[in-house]
Image (cartoon, rainbow, N blue to C red; front, top):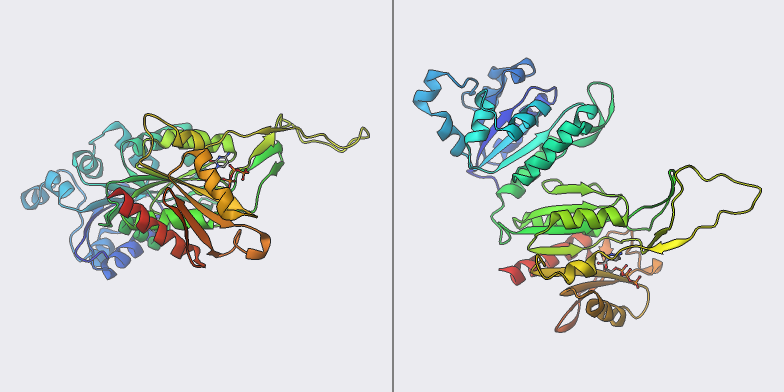
Length: 397
Ligand code: CTP
């Protein structure tokens, strides 16, 4: 899939730079050529010799290296690749990108390029969570920079949390998704997935059994067809896909806000199992057992997400797809739901516990469109996702 693709790999100065050596091997195994750029800080973690040996070509390091300019100017270097990958992307490199610095070779290349850019951030958890970095992430996303990771886990500095660079194979999949020349290239898709968590107090919440498996599979399948995917997910059991823009949310109201921020998109798939109700006034402090009896929880209806997006005048996605989780009269309920919500298609499924669908790896769906109900055979959630993605591609192109 990466045969004859040209990757310009910028290696920033972070301990995760050692993983970039493996990344180079993985990319070359798949037939890509890798032109390396090593920042000065990067040389503190990996040597130019090992990088150039693995890439099979020279390492570019210095903006004012006249030999480099004679052989290939920095402008040309920045544009001759199919994709620029920054791994690890340090907090400093990201800040330079946001502010348009051209103070060294890496930042100059990133400023001079019109080639798509994918970054794999890596930094200490506090640096990742700092408001300055969070602001920079928003700006980079708005500028069209694609992200892979970071992952959550133990960090070299001894702390735990988000900030670990994605693993080489995750970065490879993100690169493949970026370079996919599928029918959805240039299209932006929104996918909601997972359950929502509705707080009762700071330690308790109401949730449902959705694992997020079907929504995750759909996001991957759309991305494999070349779509740019914004993946808005509640707290799911399965890991979020790589190579897509992941927006983690908690409650239904958070999900609605994230969906509105993601618009406009060409198509939206609402696979999330959104809680219908929340506790009207969640307690700010932990509810305690008391002599005065059991706590009384009052419920309030959550906002619908699918219906208002389906009814938008401006910015309505060309194709809006809902899911219908039903336990009886599946087709009748789902057909009525399609009318009520105003979406174009409904993917209906029977979620009675005995079907094993909610939380399982297979799905048995009926696709409901304006032309009627179409029964699909029971198949893996990945296969449902692939078939749905192909249908979406056919409808949009
Ligand atoms: N949905 C939504 N916002 C909500 C509830 C549901 O966007 N507050 C979306 C789901 O993501 C799904 C579709 O609406 O695509 C149908 O969800 P479902 O739970 O089956 O239906 P409800 O609207 O909750 O209706 P009911 O509870 O009456 O079955």
